[in-house]
Image (cartoon, rainbow, N blue to C red; front, side, top):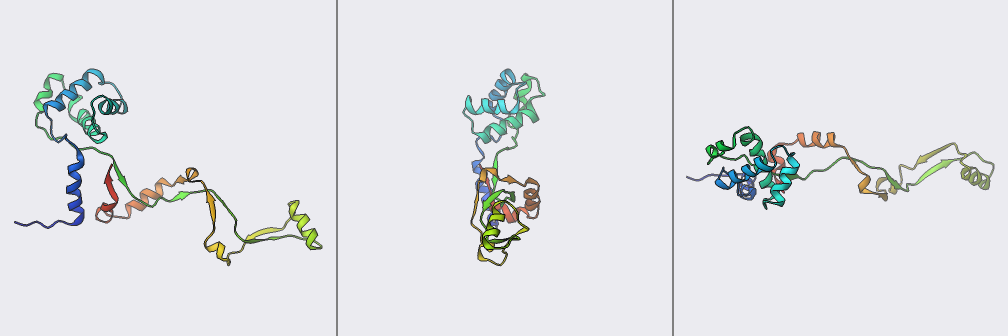
Length: 185
């Protein structure tokens, strides 16, 4: 029997190999849950995940999978009941990155050609009035080449990502259209 896979399905199968060594509840997983019960039963998610990574040598995705299983399956049980879960499948949790064009609000500095309208009796008087801030209006020359392709100076750390617009933009696509832009971190 032959199966045909789309490229996205094939990549998804390959990425499942990266998900780590925790697929089912094993004696090692039970030992981790006992340690969490003993030392981190009331700890926050961040503290427990940090403990699993730093002290137990787990990857970030492995630690998240164990934390998820602790919350869903183990935290409400008595410690003696943990062995009853041997062989149960664990739900994978991991960190993914999704490549996207991010709409941002950005303040920048640049120089665009334009005109300053000044009332004066001569060129020198016009310049003097402008230097004192006495002018009628300022307009950008929208027909110049610099207007179409401005040379801007800006700081990316000052960019505010328009988060609602990013989510709205991503919602316009189906999984098949962006599967290649999603990676397990």
